[in-house]
Image (tube, rainbow, N blue to C red):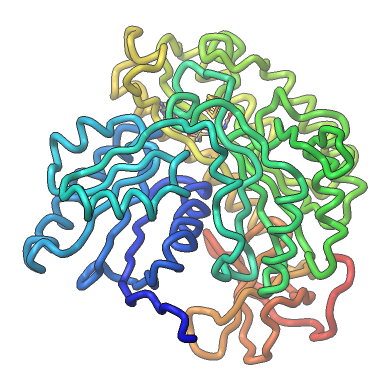
Length: 453
Ligand code: SAM
Ligand code: SF4
């Protein structure tokens, strides 16, 4: 008997925002694959375009409307056959407005409803009108996403926790992603094993508050992130583990010690502090003080001396004075970051800080400029310090130029080597010879696998 082969259709996915959106985009493609959708690199000629959006700052949300305008032109040029779907946090937060401003959008789907995409697409065809699904359904999307997934690469993301219960004054995440939910450990381990079978060697565990992870363990107890990382480190051929994004309040003792005891865990942590001023941290409802952050950094450096840190900073949150900003600069100088992301505060509709008197733009801009100059200096110094060192690199594929291969250091720095050796998926020692602003160059010192990495 012949199996029914679905008609081939072209799917183009545009991803804005965080790594969690990158992961979600890949999972949406997996959900649609059984319907015959294969991904293509450009929207021209696509049967369906998904725009997976970010609402974290105003500029990110604005990008959606300008990009949608371009898609409308393509849709009209193709006789309106292209289906346009908007997903992600803008869909969740502004779904109704979106359909009013862009009525040519066929489908608006919030982050909790991706597993329902096939049924929603069928509804658009059946009802011949736009469909919106921004519910927080009782059924957990992770229980309904398909097991079969496309290969994401030697380094791949894996979402283990979603949503947030912390309600920082500036942040839309608790409203767009909903309450904090942890996936059961067994389904995460099974997914990691499938990824490794496809060639993945480094897994980045994702969550808005990934270190608040508290999922059901296979033994019936609740596992924290340290326990989950231990189980994942036992997956054969899974060489490296990272996790992001962490909240300082959830950085428990066991997790700190995991950086000493778990050989797969990289000595690198993204730990957003947002501000160095306790007054601002209280105004932000962060539930930690600047000294809590200092203590965590010191403990981690104590148990793992080669530990390096990245962070996020918000400049010009309502109420921020020159003294508050000076406290942030002090914390930055004392800590010494490998890299950090910094943003001007952007008022988000519906969040507590949006209604407060705002810091003038020129003040924010001047402070951000000063902070970013210091962070750039620290990043350059961190990269320059690697020159002359021999360090383990996980090779991920070919470099941008012929005759080059590329990989990642322990600190996720891109490393490029002149070689044509087929080393993808392997860890080898590289002597770093030159530091560019955002990548390193080096030479292979051995093509024998480096064990301790
Ligand atoms: N859960 C993480 C934490 O607690 O730090 C942060 C996740 S958030 C998606 C990523 C970063 O966006 C934040 O760390 C913050 O620096 C920045 N961010 C969030 N809301 C913002 C806003 N309204 N304006 C500017 N930056 C913002
Ligand atoms: Fe947003 Fe992170 Fe605060 Fe949650 S903890 S509200 S995700 S900044």
